[in-house]
Length: 329
Picture 1: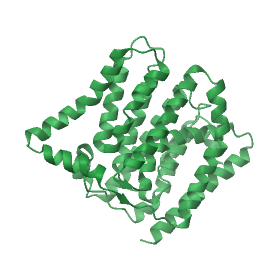
Picture 2: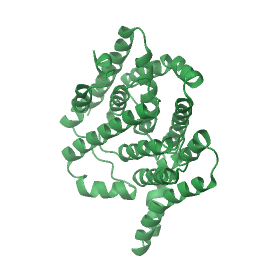
Picture 3: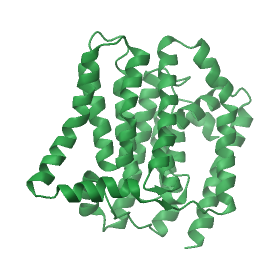
Picture 4: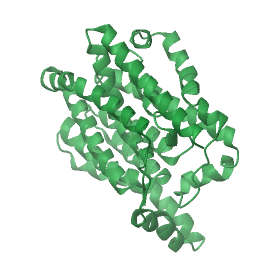
């Protein structure tokens, strides 16, 4: 059983994750989806320019990024005491949820941004009980900026650094300033490049103002989509009791970091609302906190069979939803 298998911290569990990712992306391999090519942020535009015309390279590159995000999330969930046990369940849930919807099965800027957001959260959590956290907050600001340069709505996560400093540390004004400097420096480099080539108008209109002002609604989905959403909501509801227990009885580090993830979830909802297109693809930011939350539910579920049934219902809903959508292409 997969849940029991991934509850263990074993080399076999880690090695099987790429196989699972490829299985979940198999429909996209048979019928590759096009890479988004309009109003791209500068860093993502560079990636698309290099590999965007090669569908199978983008396919495996996207899977590699999702696996990277899963391993990073798993590592910091265990390190910072936001996972109940040393297991590979956070990575498993991240990979599954990042592959849940058919529109997610292609290279997209939010996949890149997620990796940098995970790195930023790790840096913020690293500030716990450190005398000086200048390097950590600088790096966190830089990672959020890089996430934004792949996908503009990611800028909404910059305040998560300050939220983390409020939750985790006493007030040190230098840390707040340094995090802002770390956030601004990548934008100064990009601004200088476009200024040198006399393209500032192009930068501001095509990559900032237009994506924020234009609204493309793409939320029509078959009934299988709503069944999948129902399973995800069921997992979240089943895990609420465990979440409240951790928030009231966990260690100081655990409680602070869980609150940071709750704020991350709230900001991911805002990011979804300001996204240039209202598509399920932008659910991806919420996958970070939801994966940890779901992993803690499966770890704490005393009725092992119930956890397995819920997880296999989720997998079945995902594969069936993908089949319905890809068969209609």
